[in-house]
View 1 (cartoon, one colour):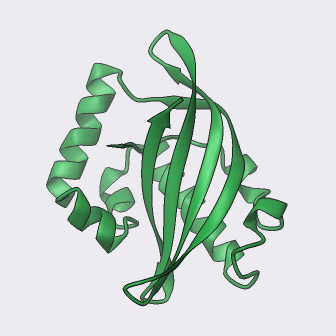
View 2: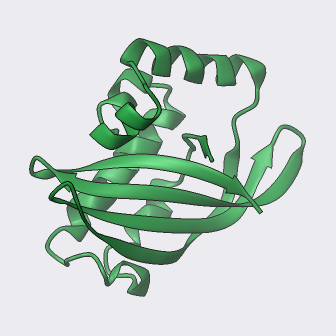
Length: 146
């Protein structure tokens, strides 16, 4: 799987708080999760990669051996090359809870949708892991072309 950050509409994510797909996530934690997802995607859209990095899960940083400087450089390279996928339409396909990983609650949110990649539109899935750690949500996104 390829680590990928995308742009998403805050309006569409705002509808998730009470959506059926998010029912596995405790209702008291949903608003903050949606807020963090919105921030994550907004930072992508506004190219605030340093702020986006601060929302990554510690597991994501470790698994991909990321540094803040490397993360910023890789995202700027995607921008220059024009090789970033931009969602045309996204919807929550499913949400699964992973049993506590290292004493942290983690959920996998699968978005399905259409993405514009250069001059074509492709159907993809975006896997977002959302982990409740240190009193807040942290995020890691992975893209899978279908």
